[in-house]
Image (cartoon, rainbow, N blue to C red):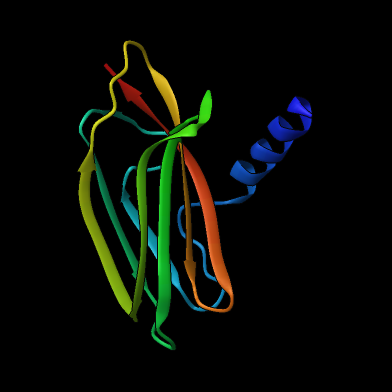
Length: 122
């Protein structure tokens, strides 16, 4: 079971990028970026846009790769607009370099999903 979870998570991270298009929704992360290192507080800077239709919702969560059940950052809003931007900060206390996973989901009937990893350092 654990091996299957690791394989599934690895496949998800390998196939998703920080900018995906599906229903026309474009997701652009300025921070945090894939594979980069950050010190706390971490800036969450992201734009969602869709020229054709309104985006119904935006969900983002960040967690330690070693502990996916402990959410460090959670954003979950119904927005119903064609454009939405987030500019927030969140704290992460670490004593050593720690890998974090960022997952996002947005859209309408067709959802755009993705994930990437980044690191936080003391």
